[in-house]
Length: 412
Image (cartoon, rainbow, N blue to C red; front, side, top):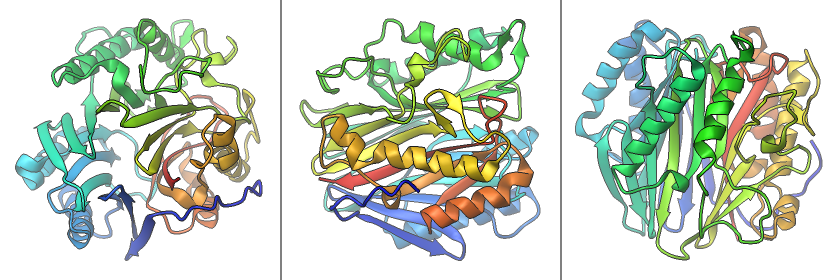
């Protein structure tokens, strides 16, 4: 660890463990947010394991008083050919209360057929309104802010090329948002799931082709107008994760926000230990990845920090090749530095900083199944009792073995 001290504010995060299933509860200006990582504890079939995971979520949500208030979920799957029956199971379970749902072809590290990450909102002093447009689009409104959750956005083109399919998926996402009068410039967090992410497509890497599409799509977009600090002298992009999957296609999801004037401030964060992704040299990609290391959103007395997919990179170089434990440590060091009070002060926002204690949820992507136990041991030693999803996924560089994303909360 790098020895950074805890900022003086007290975290509002309540972390619990329910027979090995992690969840956390965060009070944001009088609204309860519940994060659940549900890994089946029993069952051999998809139906049995899905029922077990959903029962875990229901138990937690009931306990925290947010029943019927699940707004977003990510479903990690071992066998992609079971996606259709999995979707039927979830539709039957939720009925007209279906969250924005993304199905991700990444096998859970525990060996199960399925694991589910869920976000619920509701109990608290403030009113919460939820509009369920479809299983791809759910809007939650509270404290003068609309949170727009887009799930499982896929291409609508017959082309097999990554660039064309990525452009098509981005267009579909834009259309989804536009259906609720939300512009793409209001997106603050994205996920790009791509099969064979380090593979080649002609002379270019598939990840490079995704980045080329993202670059072209973002060229005329000014993100967060009127919400980002005016003194920032670099482009503003969403926080993001670009990660591999076990199939060959592109899947995307995103979070956008809409707020009353002066209700929120968006602070794009860069890491003092890393080169900004959008300034990577051409040796990594002809079009650099267009995302910020994290996006901090302040509202009232709370700050939510969306941490992008983070790996064992300092400056722009991979560190500790071949050593998954050291890579995991470096990745957590990078996250710690990114969300620290010192970094927020450097960005002009003292008092917004956080530590690893202020994480409410993490996802850990591991390249090799045999590295699961080592990676998990490091994460548990550093993070303690925290809802965590571990999934097998290829990382955007061949030598990277682990990638971690997170959400942190602090008060000021």
